[in-house]
Length: 308
Image 1: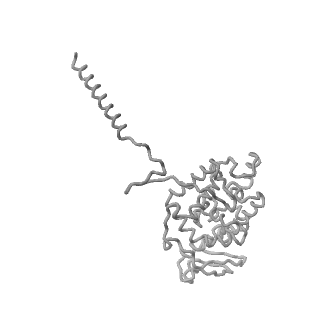
Image 2: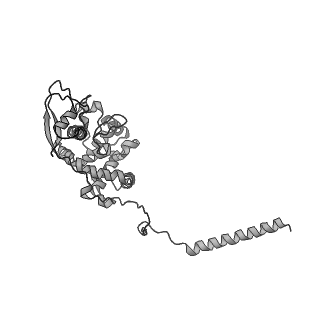
Image 3: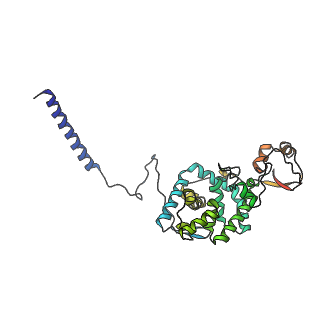
């Protein structure tokens, strides 16, 4: 027998012994996998858990059919995304403390369910200066033509899409008109993303009157579920692992109203006259788009000035 054959047989025997030892080791030390409910993070171990989907949910007083698997899985996706995208959701919680007190009274006054405040969260992240690639602007993400249709002034010097109070009132006009058309707040919310024409077309095409029965594109198909997920997390942040001290929340603006009835030559000078910086003035009045205001018609505008 050649040396090569001897080496080959020895190598094969060694491989068999190693394989046998590994199999025996596997059977001796293996254990039944832990179930999710039994699984616990060990000290110092990073752990990620699935979420418990609530048994009952509503949007604007309308029942979410969470007992359906397709609905439950769609909501699960949005809850997971918004729970584990921690930095974004923390910012939502902090900003909500500043802007919800402005939005909520307007929704109530206009007869729109309070849950619609969560549309502003998913539309703009509660960032009043937000602008989409398509040109939608402000906290409610109005397109220029739609904003004018609902009574907002939009031009080079003044763009009321960035005026939170006026834009919220305009959004309420849309919601009420859509509700009158559909008789359903959930469809009214969906139409804010896809448009009334788009939603109505799909309702007719698919022979249904229920948002949860519609097969829609990615964005609109997720839209209402995103709203519901954000509502659930922001309503019970501790339940989803978000712990924010009151002192870390962004405080509401403490301002007083100041009327402007004529032109303003330079807002930097105007700000100095009121003992504040140009930056602070523009931060709380982002709807004033230029450094000046022509106001040839002598229209009355109300700006905000810090109370202190």
